[in-house]
Figure 1: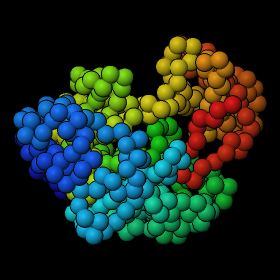
Figure 2 (figure 1 turned 30 degrees about the vertical axis):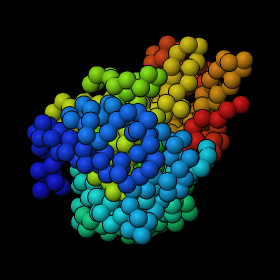
Figure 3 (figure 1 turned 180 degrees about the vertical axis):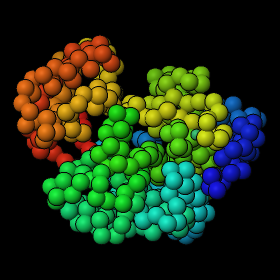
Length: 428
Ligand SMILES: [Zn+2]
């Protein structure tokens, strides 16, 4: 069986749009009737549920922003009785009040199903042993992966994040075949495995990496795949939408949107206008089937492209490009737009650079300057002539951005390690 849900995953796009339209109409009516905040928002925008006559009419609906979600913390946007909810999650809230996600029984079933669809496409099967090193707790990450893997019938090892030596021991002893964590944590785990005397590419049964929660470059993906001798897959999701499971990455490494549940739009982040297919902009999602906390036109602040071009894998689900970065992380350096993932791409192209790096941002009188700190691999460090490594990376950055950004090479082990999301940008 190639597909988890063949009917949906390979459905002609027009039929899929028909489903999207029916579901959109239903969900818009539901939020308007069940939630006074949505009701007021729609009234203010001068729109009634009956005005949605085509899929395109979604453009008439007002956006939902992260600030609004925080303002209505915790349950202001609930569209069912709290009594009918069976699970709740929340984001970290490092930059304000956390964003809350509440789920009915049906929402949880949908979540498990879209996660199973994603993991199945990645190649996870019943015979697999999946080590779940995302942090368990309020975050959605670990729970989404667990639900999907168990729906497939794989065995889940819920190590959660942290205690890296024990993670490595468990990985070895339990015959783990798939690891779920952030990409940066997998790099750190490989370092620790080496310190413990293991060869990450030879001494484990690992064959699949299920990575998410960070924007990472294709070059970083290649590095991690070589490091562990695995196939690495991308996962994308948001607490506001459902958690992980918004996309299904196929063997062609294309991010198919689970569009029967999540309707995607790409907008110009400045004007809010819808962009043409293939143009890069801010991703906006509408949940089509969620009951407890539907999101209507949620602005993700993530920058990506969108396409309905058919894929070699046979899936007809539309695809988004990999996230270039959050629009919040976007920097303007000497008039040039810079995303951290572009710098990562440049660093990873140079042999001898490890996966550990940091961007040092400095703002003086409205002018942003940027420096890059990178760690070489142990081997490269021992070779000496470190200036040459710095120069090579500077050249790669210049080739991508046409910008001179100074690179400083620090000792291996100098930069902080993270067991969850890596903090790549520091401000001075
Ligand atoms: Zn595909």
